[in-house]
Length: 78
Image 1 (cartoon, rainbow, N blue to C red):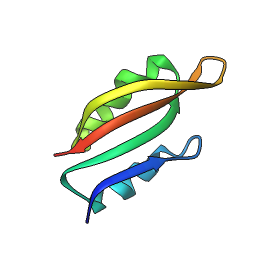
Image 2: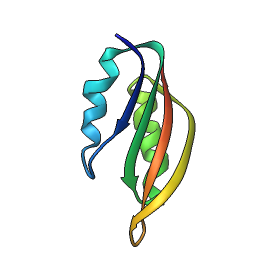
Image 3: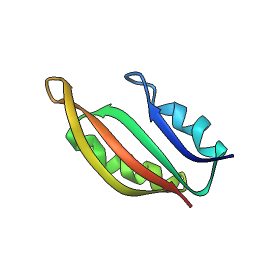
Image 4: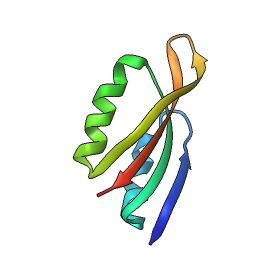
């Protein structure tokens, strides 16, 4: 079990979070990076919460295509 995981994933491979979450301790941090359009973020945050992950902070951190940005999420497993 890990206290922290940094997960910079390839484009379109968000399902890796389902493999990472079980190996992080409760209260542990997951730093997750993904590529999304701005309108997809609220739904993604809801998905995280349904998976037992609280979003402490999120931010846009670069563009990869017109309308698509790289997003960083600081998650805490509960």
